Amino acid sequence: MKISAADTAFSKCIREANGYTCEMCGKDGRMECSHVYSRRHRTIRWCKDNAKSLCNGCHRKWHESPVAAFKWFEGKYGSGRVELLIEQMNNRNKVSKLEEKDIAKHYREQLRILEGKRADGETGYIDFLSWQ
Image 1 (cartoon, helix red, strand yellow):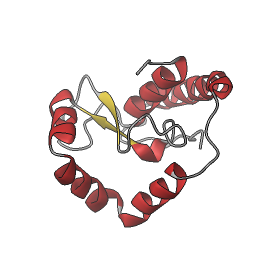
Image 2 (tube, one colour; image 1 turned 90 degrees about the vertical axis):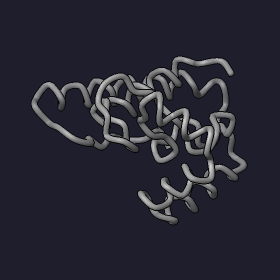
Image 3 (cartoon, helix red, strand yellow; image 1 turned 180 degrees about the horizontal axis):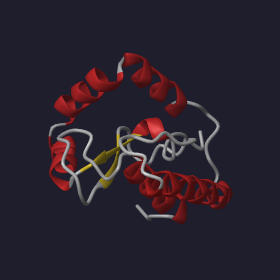
Image 4 (spheres, helix red, strand yellow; image 1 turned 90 degrees about the horizontal axis):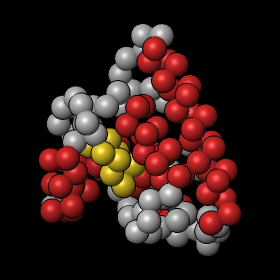
């Protein structure tokens, strides 16, 4: 699956918002943006509630043991978040390819805000506005 400018900007926001810390094991450093439900679901592909910041090892575990990973996710974030994601995923209003430029622009702006807050000394998770 091709990585778009919107994917790149979104991924950077997810990782920056979490302070480049793995949400599963707490490791700091190089992180990856992992989706709860596959990126092929364009209705939630750029939804912050559908993504996590994971180290490479935890990202591999996520895909190797999806049942255990999903149980972790539901335990950490609750069944309400899962239900909301499923509802959004099944929404018939798909995100068009034309909207991707706007999505990329939105997340580049959010990233600048996040980086500014980090530069000002904010630590831990920093919330940001999701496209969806």
